[in-house]
Length: 263
Image 1 (cartoon, rainbow, N blue to C red):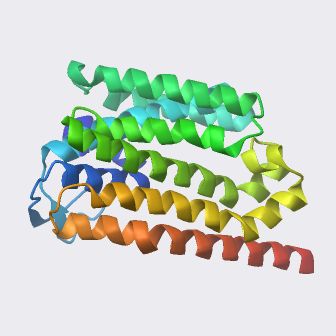
Image 2: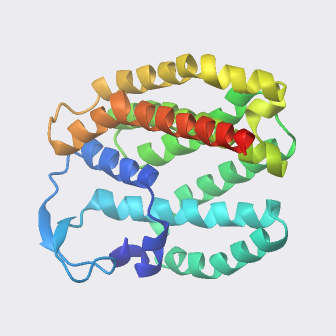
């Protein structure tokens, strides 16, 4: 990221974009090289680092676009200190944007349009979680499939779509307590009463999310047959990592809420 979108962009690195980069490497059938190097975050000790590639370059540009439009959305929807901080962050988010080549502007426009539409649905308090999740799923699927050949693009879009839907719904489940306190949009709270929403998250959401991962795995199975390290990581994330992480976070939230009542 530092090479293609300046060191400023490294602050926005997330697990979601790491998964995106791994998947793009796998789809492009690249063979990444790993070397021990120092980085700005860990300058004293060399650590394993993946050498630059076309897939990593592309992922850096997508990350820059996603960060920029997320901050714009925070400015539109935020109030007080949140909006002030977002305005300050926007100054730095513009720097990576200036480094993106013209040939990638189309994907930036698409991300911007989808982000705006998602924001409009949230402002309208959309009562259909699946409808809102579809927008983010379409955004991620499109980005992952961008500029690939027809067969790989079809695999990429389906995988990205279902992972995107999973991410949106899982984030909403994680944030339900915070959203209820702040009055922020949450698709589950708009679709049902708070008690019903929590009951659904505890007892029904796992089935919904599991189906998304099943569909994502169907797409994965149609992709490149390369069984390298990236392919193994992607499969592990889809079959174990995402589900286990969410279950752990929801359990933690439940425990913290119980402790609050005790106090």
